Length: 369
Image (tube, rainbow, N blue to C red; front, side, top):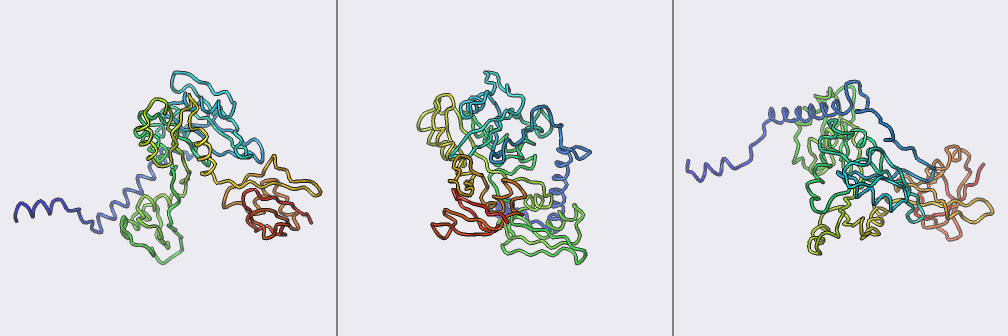
């Protein structure tokens, strides 16, 4: 064999046989189970304990806990928190001054948004360093995460935080994979896929399911480029998929050319909390990402209440969701609803039922039985 052909043979990717695929699948599943046990502890409780001041209750039925901050170093984000909400959050030149969760509320386009100022996290937080487990556990309850980064080293810090959150089952700016695993009583493992399997094969799938003691199931894959990690996430069933915005702070310390480069980082907004630069863009990006639906109530014989909207999430904004957001008994007592706005067919209003989907800034009157 010539030296050129030898080089070509050595540089080609190794072909996986059935035994190798099965073994790799087992390793992926075992690693995921070990990480879960490390986080939850031997008794299955959440790791690290609650800790004083870490969990914050929702304040009002229309004031929903939406997002928090997760910085490596907290003083700049505490400054931003204080200016945005008027809530005092301890600011110091020393890193990690914030030791507990500090709540605040920011009103955006009439909707009250609850902000949680969390302590900074350090590398190894998911393994118990610092109070990282409590911090990340609170982050799992939020609908949007702001990650505050220093513009002088954004990518290095970004990687550390993403690794910590990934280890705790938080998937940033991702959607759940289009994979379903339906257990059954008999029949073995039946695998169907509507897209080509380029990153996983049938042997890996069977190995992962075997590690979880699933011997009879229908597996349907409709996810392009589905991987073993995606399947493990589906089987584990405890992953949360949360949008994140990377807040690149201190742009007052860099050049215009460097700022142009920062805008190429996906899901990011460069700002300066000190000089209050570009914060309006950050708030608009937050509003766009949250994708909220504001619905105004109209009592009988009175004008609509435009001061305190009922805030719903896109995808859960039917009339029934609107009723439940006010009080769970209202849906049971409702005879019909009259809706004015973008979702109504007529400008004079439309009579609808519980399943009607509302749009942003609709006005709703509930008629009881």
